[in-house]
Length: 311
Image 1 (cartoon, helix red, strand yellow):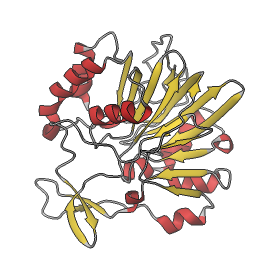
Image 2 (cartoon, rainbow, N blue to C red; image 1 turned 180 degrees about the vertical axis):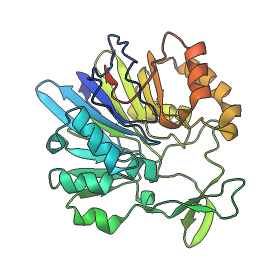
Image 3 (tube, rainbow, N blue to C red; image 1 turned 135 degrees about the vertical axis):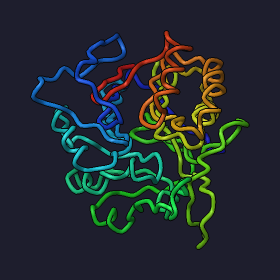
């Protein structure tokens, strides 16, 4: 494995632009979590998707980038306006994986962003995909990410399967996540077309990111964590050679009956990892969030659209 040069950051600020849940009355804030104080006439939108804008600082350096872009440009641009986000300051996008609820706003965003920004993704993010959902006569085809349309925006496309560092080596993207747990089995209903055949989706493109905050440890952010949130954390620890996890944010994909059996094992492993903070989002699901809140109350942070985390 090539040694990665992940530098220490002085701080990270992550604001949730898109998530499944919005609540204007959820005003409680802490030293690490701030809610957006908005007039009642200005309402952010929620949708089944995820987008987070991240500001990383080290000394006099500052880098601003997006992780994922939600389902629709409508939601993305509306919330950019609500939270006063200047798109021209965004240096790049890291895509967690090739599902529409994470890339849906991407091409429209790139059309309005500064030209020549970076886009980091796994080459299999472009696979054709579908869901074989119980009760449906036909398999549900999912929207594809259009590589040619991306190229026309002038984006600098970085297709990589390997862990890499970005933004002056302050941000680590994971590449293909090693599967080590015996209970995180992916998404059984998901299929992908590989070499002309529909097969169970291996989600090789599923990745997260990490920032190493000075004196605190890793801040790990996942998109859907189809590789498993515990696998994702362990992979981050291994490739960064940093064991201390300060915070885990993002989607854990524990929603729905098919994932109910692994909520317990996931929480038990999370207790062993022992991050200082946990902020489940998006596809984690209400039941899993409630159990995290009940079993790890001193670490759990309830997320909603517009929440800013500062570490």
